[in-house]
Length: 252
Ligand code: NDP
Ligand code: 8X3
Image (tube, rainbow, N blue to C red; front, side, top):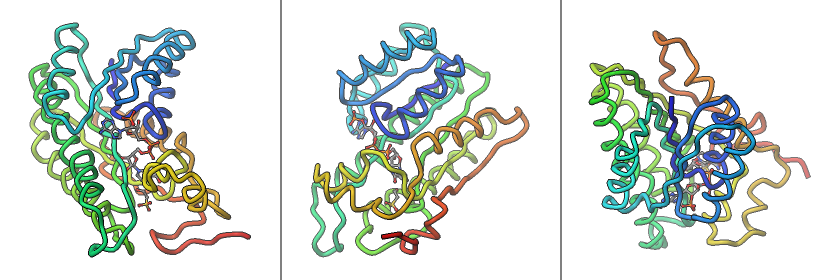
């Protein structure tokens, strides 16, 4: 069985790649940072003896997505499980002060990119007429909205809607569709959100024990590992110290 994880060069995607490889699944890892892809591929193949295929493309670019998946098909690498993880938040501003380039990168990655790859892989799964599982990484931001989160929250609400819609459309083809919606996870997420401002990113997690990427990977793996007749539709997972997007307890 082969598991394709989008956005496996850091954070949640990387933790998923490691956990599936550790459990002896062949994996396909994707991302834009080719040096990281190469070093992760070498490390995981050496450590776990599985086949790791790396695909270097920008998920915002539909032609690049299509070519990358055609490349897999030409090499007879069938994808059984798709983990739709690649995504980002860019900026944290009111709607009136938001930056267009931030909005576009979030919409193009979190919504359009997810759609591009899902279309390719779901059609391929249907052609294979066997098993398929798509696991979407949403967010607590897809369940509620918070001040200044506007467009990021909108993209994750879209993922929540698509998760439900895909489940209906793919039902006749024995393709499971699930989602994991985390609260705060300490990854490169906040560094990206704040355009590389590491000090500002660190403050997000100050005084709180956030989730680790491995917590999400374990949840994804558990969802994947349920018996054939069981599908986990939707999981919301939060740090114990975070009740919702805006209410949490911090220690000084
Ligand atoms: P990271 O920034 O650590 O990882 C994001 C991954 O997505 C990277 O591997 C990055 O690879 C990839 N990615 C981003 N943009 C693109 C693109 N245009 N094309 C291809 N790959 C891309 O963040 P997280 O691990 O935290 O985020 C993973 C997912 O989890 C996202 O969908 C995020 O919204 C979601 N999430 C995160 C939470 C958090 O608190 N951290 C909470 C809830 C959900 P590269 O840069 O190499 O292209
Ligand atoms: C990431 C969680 O609360 O920063 O999706 O939006 S949050």
